Amino acid sequence: MRIGIVVDSACDLPVGYLQRNNLVLLPITVRIGDTILPDNRDEEATLAFIKGPLSDQGAEAETTPYSSEQIRDLFLHRLVTDFDQVFCMTITRTRSPLHDNAVQASYAILSEYKPIRQAAGYNSPFSLRVIDTQNLFAAQAVSAVEAVRLRDSGATVPQMRERLELVAANVHGYMITRDLYYMRARARHKGDRSVGLFSAALGSALDIKPVLHGYRGNTEPVAKIKGFDNAVQSLFGFVGKRVAAGLMTPVVCVSYGGPLEELRTLPGYRELRDTCDQHGVTLMEALMSLTGMVNVGKGAVTIGFADGPHVFSA
Image 1 (cartoon, helix red, strand yellow):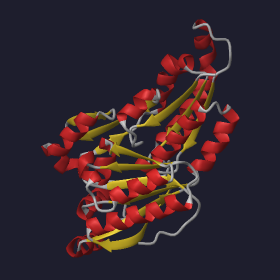
Image 2: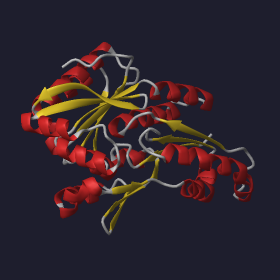
Image 3: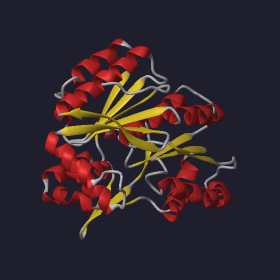
């Protein structure tokens, strides 16, 4: 059976990994003023954005995911003949309409695919499963990596479906942003009051960095640490402890809103990489998507892994 895996632009995986494993991308469009930037996970274009003048206007960006009609067209024009089963793995539905768009599109796809497949010489049925990864960015990538592992190991479709739902419900994502003022401006532009002016001003004045935790569709601060370097070092140290204790899947995904060379010099990162190596866990690095960067700002770190319930400790 030919199994396809579909992700969206916000899923922070390296471009080479996407290409080698034949993952299909649902691009997200970023609009800043009169400039439209399709987020196709083009790393050169993303790095150019970071260095260019438009990055200063990122807080005012509008992001537009694929509509249900665009998803329907992609499947009917291509995927229903390229694959027999597709797992469409979306950014958490609490932060984007993409999941609901994909679910809506699935009804039309499953009712219209038969003549298209038959014309291409396929008489077997086509199946589609839309999965809410319940997370963002690097954490979203954990479920996609598990889908690839399961597919390549020869797991059946029911086995994949059950396992992926379980993993998605147990992925923990953490994020530390450099600029609270940016986060506040972005939140205000989107009508999200989760980052208040007072807390942003106070945090920036004192150089306090909140550690944000994403889990089962919810995002909340779990710690406040003075200094960006101290915060990321504490986060990497905590993740290393979870790796040593044993994860649900053998991967930690990390993304950075800038050149990966900068990520590798952050305090605690080398130690985390060594811990992952010692425990047979892949540490997968990716440049943060353009979509992610306009939402959380340049220089942010996100990290994700599948694990049981736990409490963050600095």
